[in-house]
Amino acid sequence: MELSQSVEQWPLADAQSGAVEPVRPRGRPWVKGQSGNPAGRPSRARQAAHVAEALIARKTVPLTNKAIELALAGDRTALRLCLDRIAPARREPPIDLALPTIKSRADLLVALTAIADAAASGALTSSQSAALTQMLIALRHATW
Image (cartoon, rainbow, N blue to C red; front, top):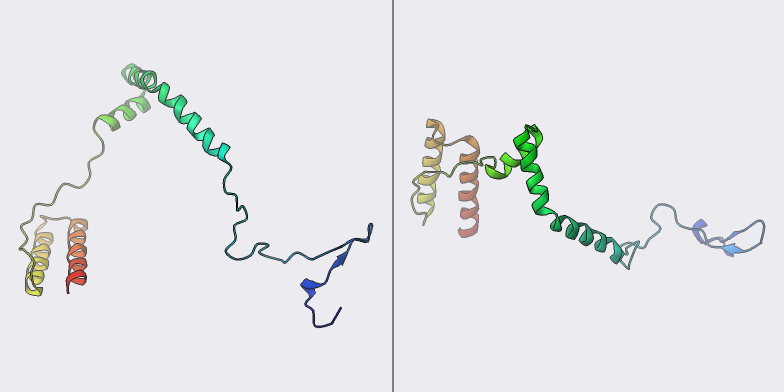
């Protein structure tokens, strides 16, 4: 062996059998970009998910009836579950704001001013005005 070889290339001798095996690199044992499991996830893992989904699908109606029964009996968790399905939490209401058709930068300035005025008067929430402003800025970047 030459002295120019790196320490990682030097073979190690097993004390009992005298067999020589190469040293494994520290840190990352796999080549960069190569998966540790080239074959991928075993197919039986996906099969288990399909089996569970099929079992639940067969019991959908009885499970729903049981949840309704528990809700009617006074179980607060079941009641919340049923009400969340009947009347889901409201998202932000639609924005009712008349904006001009934007064909030039001057129209964009008019639209941004209308959004700022509506936010200042309380007609728009801060999140609604931010969303509209971001949309108009994206339009500006896309067209000019």
